Length: 320
Ligand SMILES: [Fe+2]
Ligand SMILES: [Fe+2]
Image 1 (cartoon, rainbow, N blue to C red):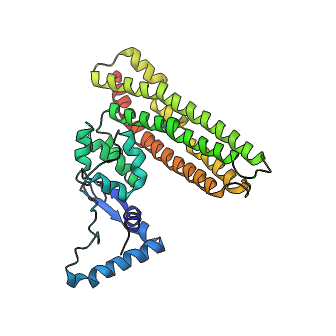
Image 2: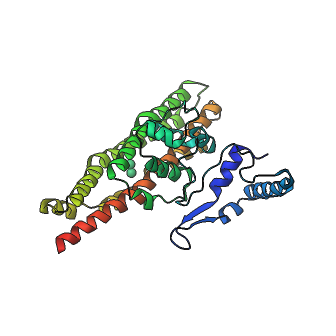
């Protein structure tokens, strides 16, 4: 019998290409799954099992019937009628995303839609965000472009808060624990790791501060001017001085630097240290990297094109 984790891996391995070969069609590309021998074997076994059990009125995927991810026409794997507990069974990495939306444990039997209504959340916005995290090939730009900047930026700010107030202090705590336990004969690698981590944290803080103090207010200004219909010449001047194109070119990948830190831990940490703690630390660093990658993907693929589209319209209006 296939487990929930195997099922989730199988589903995630199938690439979804929206609007291919024509608009309105969500093309499911299984070649991404076929390239992974373990998953291919699992899919073959499950398919064979389906036909083997056909006489027993097998109902097909999902075999256990425990949850049924909805592959709807708008390309979402997680749908409004799925129970929230089932969403987490499908992908437990979504837990921190949920808390950014103010959704906490104790879901009971409530569906995604019911919980969103209870928290006064826009269910469609919630769904595109969780699906964008759940399926790396789900390209949210087309969907998210339809939402007001307020929703998008509020979500991005909450993610920043999570990185700085939850994730980074947690990793720092693990590092402190690591340095204070076990037999440490050579302190140099740990000193190096602490120094590297401190430098990384201040770089991440600078990155976030710049976005919150400069980029997001600028994006709001563009939206406000765009919606007003009659662009103020002063604001047009501002747009000409700083644009989303500038942000795009300076938007560095802070998550890349985490790679170096992971490498130092992987290659140079003395074996006398608490290895379980080292593994926890590394896992947290890898998770942070994935989370930062997803966050940057939403900034690059959604925020930037959305604001650029408004900038273009404003400059065209000025040219008339
Ligand atoms: Fe950001
Ligand atoms: Fe960023």
